[in-house]
Image (cartoon, rainbow, N blue to C red; front, side):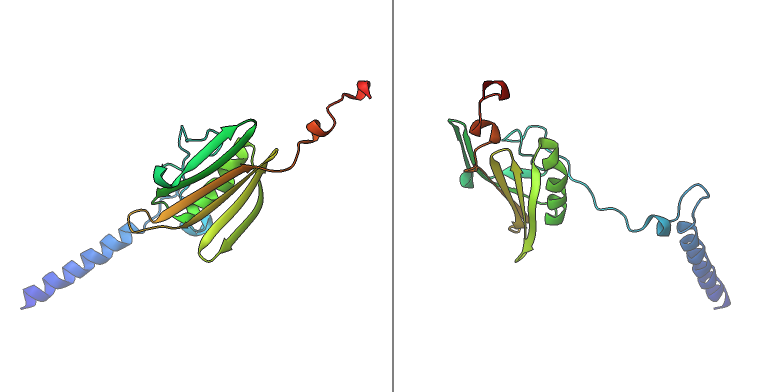
Length: 165
């Protein structure tokens, strides 16, 4: 019985020593408290999205059954649905970071009834992105809607050069 107690105490001491060793920090390693909480993972952009200037995060697939687009006579119209598994807040961060790279300007951002909604503008186009909860197998949906706005670009209003006026 005495040997059993001794073995149990040694096992406890070994477990405590192992736990202490796991939390040990080297001199060159900064403490986690000085760095704050770990930053959330950033999503990468697809190398060839269906629409070149509308980025799509890796891990999302175009649902062709519920998507359509048109380009004709200087106008564009896009209505795409993408399905994937990354977190919807990570997707919203992705669009805040990636759209300006493609010359889109964030105009409005809203969180409403569980969905994140971001509106972007570029020249005479608007892009509305809705990130929402999906289904069991595709927990996140991205709806991308783009249309040519009714505004006329400033150059089209006064096409004459200063010297011709």
